[in-house]
Image (cartoon, rainbow, N blue to C red):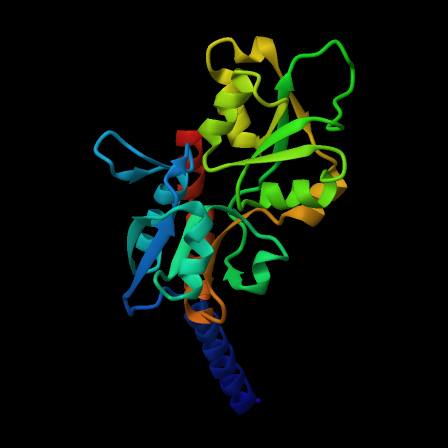
Length: 253
């Protein structure tokens, strides 16, 4: 009985070693160029020194540190982000991007790192229910929010596209549009300003449609770049489990 036990011990040792090796941080350093549109506070924005800051940026820096990546960040217009990725100008895109079935046709994504819930903001009304029928609705151009409106609200409303969220909210405040369709984080920041909560209401979308519409925010990478995808997913797993992600989240939200 001694020999089988020895072989069993050896088998268990190498099995354990194999599991540890599969989750171990790779030793080879990879340089990763991230593109982002730094016009979406608090996820990414330019500070007074014109340096790119934000929740997304701090989170990626933590991921890079955890899995031995040397990362740099470059400001790009939102509508050109995924195109520049497809042409290999950058290695990854971090810019509060929803993981959608449409985008997955051209790029790959990491696991989701943030659950996104787009909402409507409109002027307070005496009516109990909110309707988009006949409304002029502001939305960021080339965004998944715009895709949602085109798919579900095109027949009922007038969709007005903008380059930045600040332009949308400025026109909403000036009553040039009836509603804004923005992410929850943008809406929360807007309602905290001045007395906006007194004058504006927030309206959530249908939960079933939300699940079909987006799988949350993810980091976009070139189609087929499995090595970088696995490395980033490993880093996200590490910073989530060791509490780093939660510390960064509390800093911004």
